[in-house]
Length: 102
Length: 213
Image 1: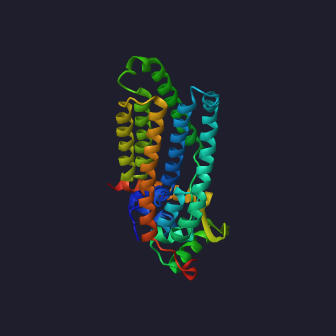
Image 2: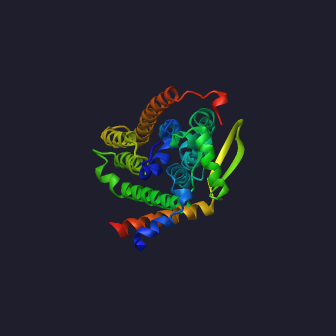
Image 3: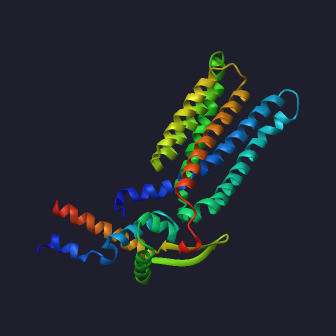
């Protein structure tokens, strides 16, 4: 396998999964977003979204806080510094791969 | 699932305008500003109010913006967040300061340009009003329309420009014509925001308590 092709195997698989990539991309454009917003924007089911968020939280890419906005209970998600770094790195790696192989 | 990643950022930004609440608040502000400017013109010649109101305008604008922000937050917390979710946007201080600086420079240029040339063209054109219409239109088109990709802001921008230029041809005193411009634009914004809010509420019913989280 050539080095160009091998570089794609070094991609962060946690972020590479489409649903998680979408979640992380959405969170990278805002300061924070709640569970309902993420569910609507991604089109994922509650269970699926919960599972993906848990994986991202375990990896330290997303911080999840249970809070209130007025009387409204909110599950607010934020991208951590590690999450931002991982997304930037992932984009760079993917861009490099595309440039090398095109 | 929508996998159109390049569109994600713009779609998230567009969410701020999805309910029309920001337009309703801006419309209210515009109408109040219109009334204020017309009142300023009316009292200008025969009372102390005219002189005092120059300083009052600044306080009115700052206070109005604070109340507008509070109104938007309160209404979004009541109508939007329970229906389609809560989002907090990044405050890009560098970008905000740059926008403020550009707005201040443009406002100064408009004021200076008006002072220098207003006398020459006052007989057929209310230059300040025409420039105000164009400036407000540019703000709608470039700051809101382009960043959000929503077509209605282009229509609002075009309306502002057309209204500003049309009213600049009227023979009304400047205070009244400016007041009329802001009031009419306020009504246009409220109608636009009202239509958007009505559609939003119809398309996004409140989820049952059990469905939330």
